[in-house]
Length: 499
Image 1: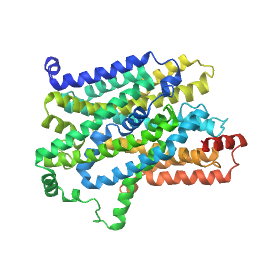
Image 2: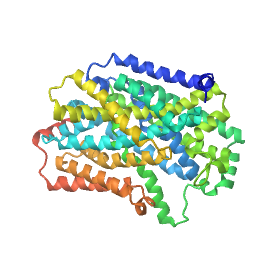
Image 3: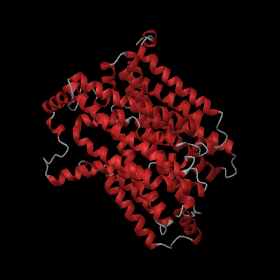
Image 4: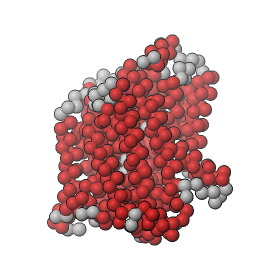
């Protein structure tokens, strides 16, 4: 596509306007970062709205506007079980993890999850810090790669860039403002991006369903094309296998306590009591956007019919939101709607980069190389970490045939199984030991990786489900078999539990 024609496109203009606004936020926040605490947690000064939308926007990523609609094209109303599982997991995370983690991390002066785990168990060996940081970096590389893949697909479908060029353009934008602004830039951009994602996901399915002739017409068309998509409970392989499939989809919600890019937002709120309001905001956002994303997929199937079906579809099912935006709206409006996908990508990848880079700065560099490092030095190490992680993720994202949904599923399962049971039990079980925490992370990580590569398992059950409970069991058994925590560790636990 010629540059002049590209620049004269109204959709490109509105899309670019949005991106410039995001970069200006990064530049504005650049001058407000004076320490690693500012860069990593924004000085713990977020409000209720900012915390809620930043957490949920970074949680859902491009998966919400590309992966979930694509999954709904294939599964129809069966994808509702996934939505239910994620909604329940979100509520449990806000209700039972958010406040206690916020209080505990402030009490221990912990900036990162590895920092928290080391202080929580009085781990002088520093093995918990190192291994949890390793888990975060490894799985966030996959997560970051999924965002870059989505960015490449977006630029290709929306503006005609070839996949590789689109990949680099999207990556450059995200890296620039994360590098400059740190946590506050990420939180504020996630806030605006969360609002944009919400309104885009409400508008597009409504317009698509109206263009078909209404909800009944959509259901009729989907029923003719793929009747199984109209059934939420399918027992073609037997009731038992149907239940296993439903439980596997709902098991996605188990991962939430182990997602650092979400739980670090809890750690950054100004006052723990503000989390109650954040919970309400977050739940409304999650329920509306996820159900809307399912209807984007259903409407996309009704509009594009056989073009999105089959092993080699003419239209990638993960791009139906983009296609519908251009089909149904004026280019000026379509530019903002497509910007919602870029918003979803940016709101997650920036968090992945920030959490990973903070692990490199705080948990590797300061721990092993420069214990006397100044705050300014750590701030710059964190920024260099952003570039390093992004560079490796770009290499992983080079193939355009990769699925955003499958990359997210792998990273999600790995983080959830490795860190979820450990963080959850660390907040509520006084008898949990350092050895138990390490065993849980080791078993969870290796179980998730091994099971992911066994088709006989993953064709029936999501690897997160067995890996999570194997990790949970390991924490309990090993903690029971090892010496109980020190009196000081137990005293701090009781003090936090009473707040």
